[in-house]
Amino acid sequence: MTTQIADESLLKDALSQFPAGVVALSATVQDERQVLVASSFSVGISHEPPLVLFSVQKSSSTWPKIKDAPFIGVSVMGEDHHPVCRQLASRDKTKRFNGVETVSGERDDLYISGSPLWLTCSIHREIDAGDHILILLQVEDFRSHSVHKPLVLHRSTFGRLDPL
Image (tube, rainbow, N blue to C red; front, side):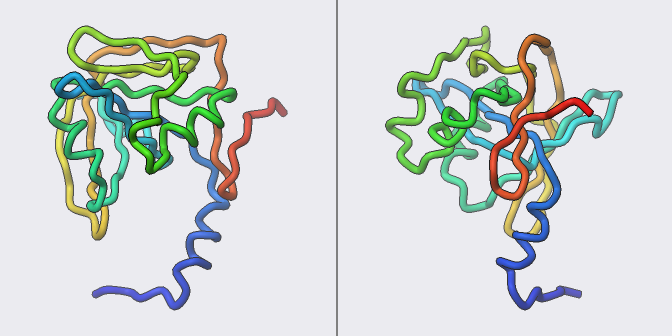
């Protein structure tokens, strides 16, 4: 049974009430840096094997390129990354990495400098999910940079975590 939402923009607005972290999924494929920005990222999917998850639109032209890399670098975006995040998510792919400091891994994985967490991942499974694909990634390695705090997306605006 399929449910139709009368006004999809109202649903998008309602769902924006849920805060989310933002990640950049990056790799170097055929000597070209590729990046996909996602706010659908989730951790703790499984501990054995260690799995994380995100979703991507089926219409993405970037995901088919990134998924060909042996490993994907997942960078949890830091609180100072909001302008970088918008740039990396830009439709103009030729300027996405202009002035963005990156670190290359050993197997085509790529990371954004200043991130609180880097995960080195391989694709575990892709699952059809309507107009999106759910991607389960297996964490192969990680590096935590606790001096940086994460960027948060809430009500379509970037923000910071504030202690209570």
